[in-house]
Image (tube, rainbow over all chains, first blue to last red; front, side):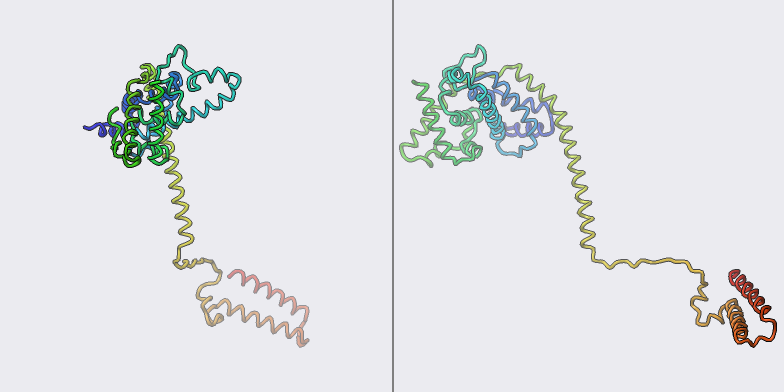
Length: 177
Length: 173
């Protein structure tokens, strides 16, 4: 049985409401999805919350999955959850205007969890704009093709590729600097 | 994470970038992605994964009950819609001629009398009644003309008695 056959069987089980199949999906994708959220937020507590929210949404929305790339579908949900988080963060930021200087000094504007140490990559990712950072992460952790990413972002494939090229080049320069 | 490139990246870049540029773009992308491989993100906590699985196990029965309820409502709505559409269609598109309504009614007249061409001949009681009417009519005419030879008061009383008898006999029938 191939990997895609296995995945198709698991997804069918999920649609039937089999909790063991959902558990298998969690085992298969939790690491990649957590990495995606962590690299975007730089905060393990927030990543924990977003990962939980993602799998709750998966249970709620599994009946709307009509075939095609499961990773593409799952990471589209992950991306929507991240954008919802960004919007709520923007609202919170307005309330925290008085603490502006403190927030700006933190990497990428995100607050670290207590005792959390950023690696070099996380620090340099904080220097990229949100859109580029998300593009790189959805490509890396979602393992999506450029065609799938372009469809997900509703933009021409050339635009996606050019943004990715610029982003990765800048990240390499930052990492080497 | 090696199976994501279901597309040929080099070919795609060559199509979109030209000449030497395509080579450097491919190299930049590959080197950038190598950095991500060399710096893995932390793994999620095992307790978090266990919590998520437990949360899913709790969520599934509630979700399935919700879906079952929703399907039931949907079926009821579809059935109602079909009934309404069928009713409207039957009203608007029924072209067959209307069925004549049959009316039933009771009558105090016997059928043979109702259908008769000569009522006096067909009904004995009516013939007697007609003779009595004629007789009374004659007596009234005699009284009116003053040709009555007897006691006129007596004649009127007799006629009244006779009318009472006729009336009683009529309603007896």
